[in-house]
Length: 484
Ligand code: SAH
Ligand code: SF4
Ligand code: F3S
Image (tube, rainbow, N blue to C red):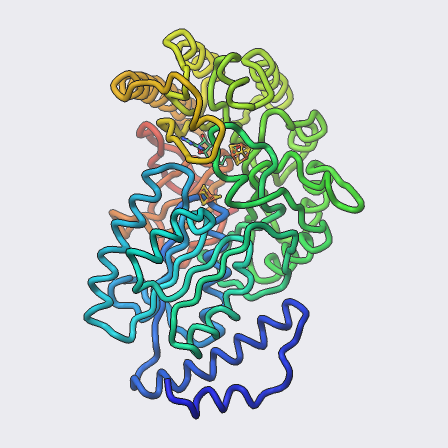
């Protein structure tokens, strides 16, 4: 970049110290540099954000997108054509990391042909010092690297990269800051994720999330409500409240409030028709929450309640702080209060020391609960977590065998659960055009199941009464009966 460019942007006022004003200042700064770059290129410059991992990362990517659009970049769906590629990474399991390295190698080759291309990496993987070391050594073409704690500084870091022309790396070990009111660009106009808390204090012994996302911090309820009211006035009808353990929301606030109380307040926001949340840790799920859900007309009849293992012995080693019996008792209380609730879960197979008996306990819980669906994972060793150095890591062939047996059981049970609703009429939110057949729309039931039905794109974002004509294992084919 030429010197006179830098000169123009630096003639501005003093840099604000407070957030979010500081970031808006850097957005303006980056915008001016980008304008010159676009003029030089003779076209608008484009970006592509690729998200790995969970809903929290997806929400962060919307924040990155909001900033990029404000700076003047135009979205490009094809990563290989974009002038600025951002990978928002996940490190919860080893294969998530491998995917990033694989795709990064490919990006490096594309960058060689396009000298104007910029590459940024952020997200959970960047919080691991070994990863950053490896990137510094073997992936020197990466232009910008930042972590989860300073994502709100994206505009500032981007401006620094655009001005300096050299690699920028900024990773923080932790933070207690929550910066509100930065721009975001939602992927869907009618539904949105809303962070209610960040980080995690549970330290399940297999899990890296507390190390890469830092300590648990709740947002002030007023800030959450303000955001949801704004979303509602913008046409959003469904919110998904996000946190690693939403059931412990609010406990560390100056004026503590419970998650159930937060839900009561959100329920009052007019325009919001559906409220979802994830993830619920079984150890913190209160009777107050069950009661609020049972009485609510807006909270979806769906709970994602990760089991991880059905063996009390393994649960203890996992530091989950519940037992097989207490988990089943909790499910009993939930089902009694909300008989039509849909329950989904996460299960890990092959945790160190897991015996066949332990595994059979997991199968037993799976059968007793009858999950509507379950995400099953093979245990992945994460360096730095207590489980990584536990004895008796289970051999790969034994784990694979257990995984396949569990998967079959889970799929059979979900197909049975799905069939229960066949022939009924349900309220469906039309979410997208069907991927395979453009004469169909894909919509979601309150219990999170999908249904495909004839319709046109103008109907997306609306609620419809749909007859679930045929169950196809884990989704339905249906027809609209009448408008809501
Ligand atoms: N906070 C959520 C889960 C976040 S991670 C909770 O407590 O339920 C999402 C899922 O990834 C976890 O529920 C767990 O099943 C899985 N997972 C986490 N660490 C893992 C590891 N080391 N190996 C395999 N699966 C893991
Ligand atoms: Fe990981 Fe456990 Fe925290 Fe979930 S609750 S993010 S599994 S440490
Ligand atoms: Fe992955 Fe980070 Fe989410 S490790 S699962 S993206 S919190």
